[in-house]
Length: 422
Image 1 (tube, rainbow, N blue to C red):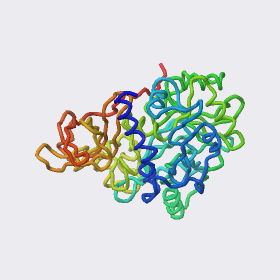
Image 2 (image 1 turned 120 degrees about the horizontal axis):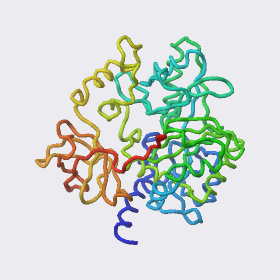
Image 3 (image 1 turned 90 degrees about the horizontal axis):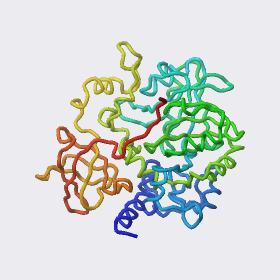
């Protein structure tokens, strides 16, 4: 292997295999990086991961593959990233928690606990949203979709695995005070949730659902369909910056569908190591690292998630709305620091590294970092005090006790390829 590959492997492996505790910090800050996965929760396709050579780590109390080794489905983390960027990778994201909100007041309730404008969402469409706290910080980031099934119209929501217990508790507390017609249906370990990502993912989906018109399905759109005869709820979305789909399938077909998807010629299974690098290349936040309960949407560059209706005069308040709406209106000038992209020189700048001026004044911190297999150079994300956050600014990053130059850049690092119908 050449030196570039050696550098990238050490970076990616620290982001995943021997650095498992960093990947799971959202859920359990004190987790051991070498903790046994024997007593952890398992997704429905755990045995398939083992058969494929999955290297299992503790992620949010689930045994999840960080990569695959020693099988015909094995790839290095570098090659897995390239697989998703050029063909298709299949991720098991069943550890994440699905919720269906039903009842005539479901929209009103979910809008009262998020920054979403669900009323304004067209049927069959979804968007990223945030669950705010009373101080304007972020309890979790979440996907929300307005959809329908045999039980009627409802809201489908997905929350992060590590945040799910506190999210559900938060929702239950709010439900107790709400008093309207709304019910929360949690769907977690009784279904499979898979993400097939990459430019050839659509070819796989079209093969399995030949009667569905994927050319008219925009990124963010969702629909019920059958995949090779198996009922599924499919959303065109993902966490890699590529075109792709998330597939909800009930327990009875979960293993069968996974086997079918991974058997497609375009597809290799992908693990947490590749997923973390892909989302960083796409400039996407990882909860507990790049955003948390002290981060406001505007400082994180996520003002766009605050819907039109919540911004309107006399709109119903939501937790932290005074802080959040003020910052959304005033923009970056209302924040002391902003999330930025960085391209550091030298060794990769990882989470916790100090960002300073050339004179040594501490002006920020790195929240995520890696070597990009696509760009073949360091990339990092972090927060910098204004006005040092402007793109093009030269700053310094402390890595292993040494200060190295870094440039502030716009994100994404790798251009996103979200699909829009012609």
